[in-house]
Image (tube, rainbow, N blue to C red; front, side, top):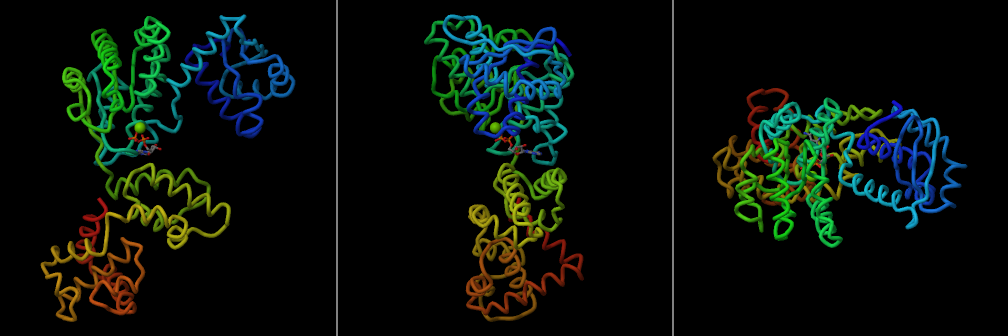
Length: 444
Ligand code: ADP
Ligand code: MG
């Protein structure tokens, strides 16, 4: 490629600067390259902007080869590099650089957030299908598509996936992804500089507009007003709009009623909290990306214990991998327990010994007072063993702690119960199924 669109150029430049940062280190990057802007790429000439002659000269003498190489690796065949100085005497360069800055921050897309990398399960299959349909449609099918659900469940991932897909299949289409906060910031800035016309222009010619986390729009009347108009214009002109929020349109706080109802006109798709299966699936798919092998039982352990959201789940996996790579120990459940003790504790909040006891009693129709008594008929003994086993598996309580909570039993009794249950899981499929159902009732 010797000529490319502005959008593509910005994207390549972003990736290039990312790579350069890893190549020369954060510190040098900050000193020399962080304030460079990309202006244009024409006939093999890449034009950048720098804040001073000093920086320009240094960049040219020390980093130009590297910049050219990295740009080439992204298919941008740079033959020579020019750097202009942006200062107030050169308004054109300055304006362009500022616009690029703005543009960068509105269209930064994470390259890992693609449909291919999205693991589909019951909780997100509807949102996934709706997003894929929107990405594949020539004419907007559901307008707007409104994705909602709790934090860290994949809304942003789906939006970026739509953007990547559209940009790949229709390079000419203009796609904008922006956070609602940034949208508001730009709007307020345009009001201050009395330049709402160019603000509107920026969004008017877009084919697909995605605004993430629109719950932040609530409360600001003028921004809501502008948002409403931008939104109507786009939908009326058959441009696709995709929005996300942590709540459904009707539950958005501080949003005018007419806007709420307008937002719900298209398709509203929610992302549900994760299930054990989905968490495990995601871990398995992420684990494949690492060079080291992570035992299945460790993945199962994580899927069981880290139930809050997918972001934390990924964080847990990364931490284990980093730890193991640095320390060079094999990955086991107890290593995971140690490395993630704080995370496990915060995820544990939800499952306590008392909750487990109560649930097991319901499941086996026995009385809580009996469970913690010294009575030993078979039914009761089984329920008690299972409850102890679950406490061991689902909480980070020690064996003595667990024993104490079961009418002051010894830790060896708990250990015996845990072993017994493990044996039964192997021997008795019906027992294993029941236990699985019980287990799921805690972790889903
Ligand atoms: P949200 O925007 O809903 O708060 P994100 O889209 O930022 O959540 O997702 C949080 C993290 O979890 C991201 O790194 C994302 O890639 C990952 N993630 C979420 N859902 C999935 C999924 N179904 N498959 C793979 N990764 C996922
Ligand atoms: Mg998000």
